[in-house]
Image 1 (cartoon, helix red, strand yellow):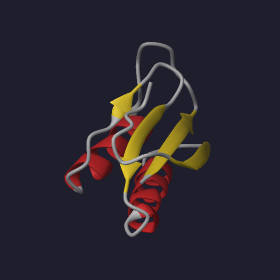
Image 2: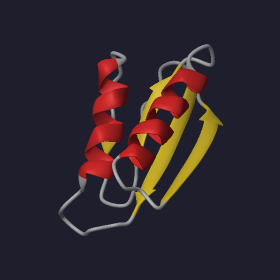
Image 3: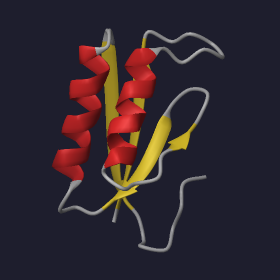
Image 4: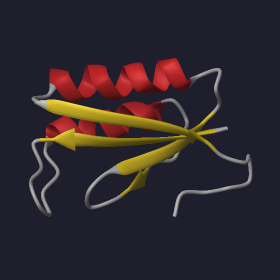
Length: 83
């Protein structure tokens, strides 16, 4: 499994804009659970669908006004969950 962490800018403290919410909704529409955080979000994905999930994040974030998206992927044990 892979832990995919992502940060979408611009950052608006306490008020995630549509560039953030649309990206999260796109991932959730794929049947995954996003761990939403104040400075970034994460989701555990299979290596087989990491491209689909990453693509959904990028497409929706930029389509809704993002200026920058950071993605980080890390291999984790199947039973690990984001901290």
